[in-house]
Image 1: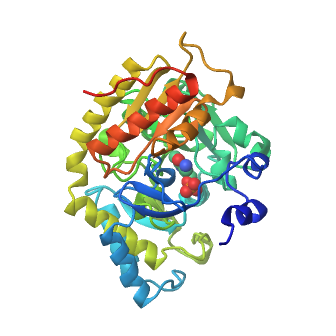
Image 2: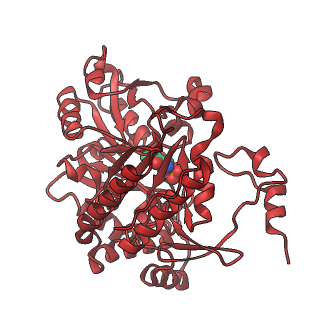
Length: 433
Ligand code: PMP
């Protein structure tokens, strides 16, 4: 039998990965071969709950018959056609279905791209070009939030507030000023040189699940509007029901100038993204050739991706996904509270809908030495109990598909509790009712 692990170690380069460790003798990477619902199966037939929704993408579970059928049907027609110079019915339909979430607003124009990074990249370039074409050449800067994450292409990386990832590239990117709160933004000097403010609304993901204060987004919208600054929302992680409403901005009745979507757009099946933009911004790009937006990718509006995205939206309706969420979110909150009470190592649980961070500290409430990599060890241990997830430092991230059931939530949290016990040596807490 082919030794896939050996081939991987010899030739693959993984994202955000210490390759020396990955390729070492002791490392035994999981080879995932199959999925069904919230479950993933490895090459040895072992099953795990996908506690990470496959990097926060999966919404309705794996191998969903409706999404599979939609992709197959489109595949039988044509897999890919150019969106440059041509169109196709599914892209037209999808753009209308997306803006329909923002009725009676001017957020009515959709630019498709490939992933979260390019959705942000596109918004940045549009924001700059808009200013250049509107007699506001002085507005060339962006403001982003400390510890935020918006992707890894150069523009998106410029917005990245995680210094460990982005510091070395800063001087090559867009000019960005960082703030850690709305109050700090309000005190910045020279706001008239700012083109746009970028934020992950309601909750920052990569920043160890950092939940913003309630009302912050609403106040940020009011402030940016008053200052003539565009509000660019990065809903790459929060979009498609994650925080309880279809989009996080709807929780605070906010309509941004740019809305960046990716990950859950196709239900987690194919790489695709969309940048929604206000019609009055779009209008500045009309006119002669010099005003056109010279930006795009080979796979822009890929028909298979559009088919998956439309099926994803259909399932929200046919399975009443959003209607079922409040009860699920409450149940999850109750179980997490129990975990925090029962485990001396869970110092804090941060939750926003089905976005959860479980922070681990020692029994005295002090952070573990980073070199111990406790979070990582706990996640590796939790695999033995049937859960796949990843930590961010010592915060365990739990972001399962929205289709997860109460029973599966229980299984996942028991696996986390057992993982913690296996690593930190406490008797496994009793999470039974
Ligand atoms: N924005 C946010 C909030 C994200 O969480 C991510 C990915 N984790 C991105 C942007 C980048 O998306 P992608 O990896 O698809 O480029």
